[in-house]
Length: 242
Ligand SMILES: [Fe+2]
Image 1: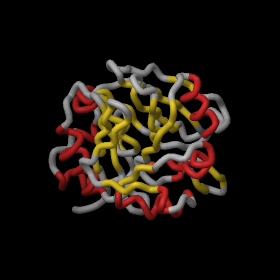
Image 2: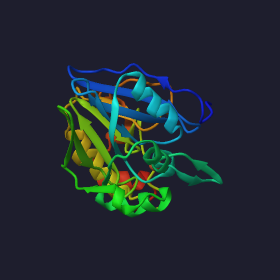
Image 3: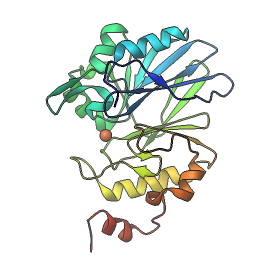
């Protein structure tokens, strides 16, 4: 397990023309932080800035990229920073000390993010599902995918899905934590993510297990959590219903 101050380990990114996408695997909970942006304008956004802000900023600088904003998939401390199990995880508050940028959050997650990070509500830009955040010539579409938390969101960007704790390689996020909702998760998986193009490349919020690359087609075929067509069956699996 890497320490939180370890240097970032890169997973091969798959840039389309003009798209900059760099994954950084950081922290003892195997979190993926992503830099996503435009190679044309050399600007990028940080997705889930946590664990080691210096490493994140230096990674952008090393690639000649300027951080112009932050995106948060959800309010959990391992994704945005805060106190967790007696430890303080560096996050959005430390990022704002390095760069003055807007933080884009889903509307239902704003209170939680402000509470756990200590960041002022004035720093947050509230969004609804379907909104887009542009960075240079690159557009990031925000998909509201509640279930893990009420304001969980995924980011769709030029054939890539940054899925936070909603979808993992062969798994999905927990629904038994405060704010979790199994029915909402089922609707997000089946009503939102299953409707995306199968060739979409998946970039989850954690590296769990041995699989490190997948398309949504792979997940549609192999991920058991994407293969429960009936809500009643799903709720039974999740300990609700019946
Ligand atoms: Fe989470």
